[in-house]
Length: 73
Image (cartoon, rainbow, N blue to C red):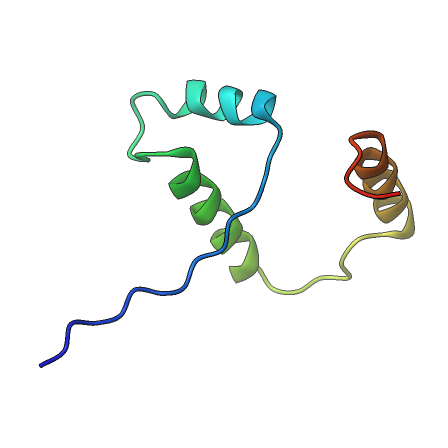
């Protein structure tokens, strides 16, 4: 009998400041790492029924923020 195969994983980058703030909040929680917490939160977001998505204003603000951080041109 073969052992179950672990799901494939992908790495993402987040600013160090956010990672450090998350680490501070995770102390004493059931989450062993920032990775575990982010995976949990994103999974929960995906479980929510699909809404209208981002408004045009939300999308503009998000793009502006990503541009200011150097992630997009």
